[in-house]
Length: 341
Image (cartoon, rainbow, N blue to C red; front, top):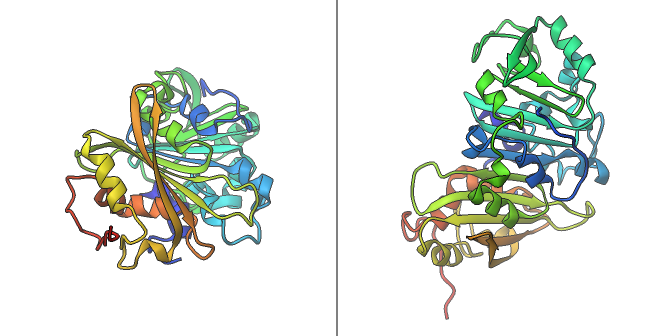
């Protein structure tokens, strides 16, 4: 998934170590951003969120990019994907500097995906630079936008390739508070905030409430239908760079057995990747969170200082979390050794 470009490139996959509203650092950033995503759009199946303002506040990044902190930098690009990987090249060419943004969210996965960057933006400057790259006016989702290429078109000799992108800037809508871009107009329209709100969809709202105050998060539907409706993973925003990383895992069940299976399997003795989770986490605690008429099962993982801060993301993307939570999965696929009573 190119949507995961930065997160997976930096964190790795091995468990070893603009009906666009305003933005800002208001409480409840994830829910606030979800409110501007269409409940019927690509974000309904995959959503990746990041709070760049939080990392700037801690000094993990500056407006020019990541600093010297190596522990937390794995989380910096969450919600920004290849726009963070391209960093200053993209900023110089387009005027969009994601390291100076407040929040980012990737809605969906290619080819049906869009990125939404929120913050204080120079809409006229960005539009001028995109126009100089060849973008033409186009109405997108009822708003004035710009088009660099036809929907889903790949131009390997075009200006996006030089920026480390493929076709993520094919269609763009930009205001002074947000930029939404994607390969096709329908995906961009789903992240403009003009349709029914994803934050009002009961299942997604419940998972967001379960995740709480996170600086990086992913909410996604299972790859195949089973006992779980939605998975959510997130990293609690640390108050200081010396803090321990606390990962949150949220599971919205379809069947009652999920709660019991999740609590029994997601333990420090579980062995996703062949080694006990206890090698990477100090503690795992379980509870339930009620939101509206939904109950979400939650686990908090306190990661050891030498463990990956996005451990929960790795469990999700690898498919380990589905095997740890869904009763449809094999009973003991990860070498879980239950503690003796």
